[in-house]
Length: 178
Image 1: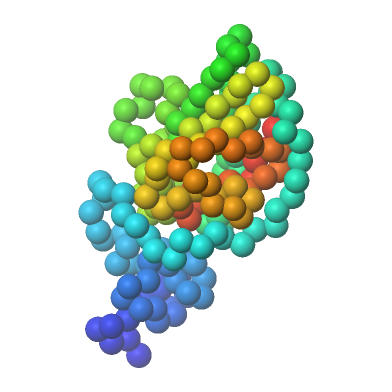
Image 2: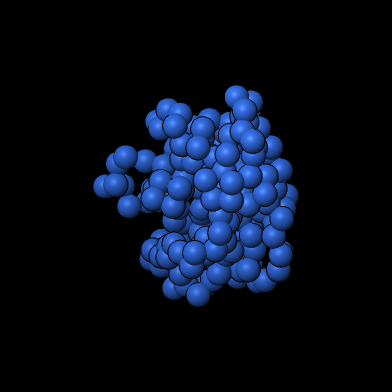
């Protein structure tokens, strides 16, 4: 029975604390979370890495390759981002986060994938292709970035490998070079 100190998950009817953002049973975003200010990034708490099956792959990224980011958390819906890097440039970058300016082709807006609810900052990470390698840098995001279960220190680039797990806030992707 629900009381004033709990909130009911609309997905599985589990009773959660009013301070919870996600259902403890099924991981669904709780009602209180989606009724708060839609314009600001907020700390979503419990900054633990999402458990994932980490697989290792190559770090070589061919200049004509694409980077596919398969959304695996929240539930794997088959959605993916296909990022193409300009092969003529030695260095090429993308910023992933939330934005209202869709004219900037180097900024990938994660809002349609639930970015706000999942704790994505406006400028969360930068992906850099430098010659034949990819690097990910956390841009001092509020809810953090993890690569294969290791939290990335803000401002420090880390090599991105094929088949890695890249987690931004509570949004996780499986990395694929194609």
